[in-house]
Image 1: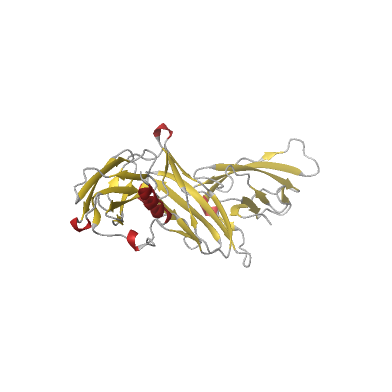
Image 2: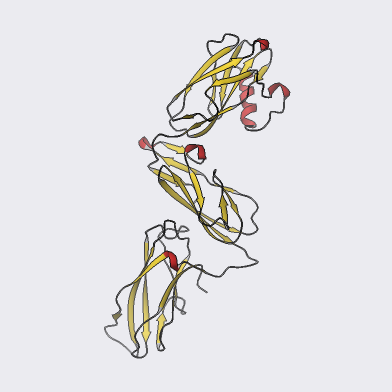
Length: 328
């Protein structure tokens, strides 16, 4: 590639999507891509054949096509009014790909850009958002752009952040964090939100915990999103002054989304003479979660061992609830 084309390519990459500062490098419809068309879909590994028409009045001598992020390809079969070019989409590439033609006619003339989309034909074996957990304090003015990778056969990894690659985004609580079709998240209010990211039926998640120091939120009740299963009561084999009962409680996430940590189990409504021992001393027990930040994934369980001091003969009955937050 000669110095002139390297210069043009550098200018384009430095201002992709913006208007060029030089009038000589502004889009000129006299040079335009006939094929492929705007939005046409391809797959990694496909050969793309490009046809460019050039107005006779330009008296152009040669041409090429720039590929955003992938260099450029020199035109062939130049007739003065048309040339062709072709390239193979790399196996690792997915998402939008911008093409732009240029010709030499005593100066460089750039034609309008055409965007094609590259979408894998098969779903990823694994989808991975690069950051699973976000904690923000209000006010938050800058949006957060999620970055998503997909792993395929032969250990190929592709950037699937763009919706053009087939990735979709959805917020569980758009009043706390909204997300657009390109994975740009905007923090709106304090609370919890989970962003579900999906491509080809494969999912991953990003959780957002938003706090407003000026208006702190109380613990958030998540009891309707879990199943709480109580094991049998076991009596201490050698009781002392008071009898101790032990019980294992299992908490399972019954929703299709992760439950963000930290989480705790609150035990209330015990009869007179029965005390929930351990935890913070007030019947609240922090849960040891298997996934930091994400907390409990869909269908995942965690257990906590409870101990009750029974100063009489009352039956041990209580209400159990699960909260997001820190026991206070």
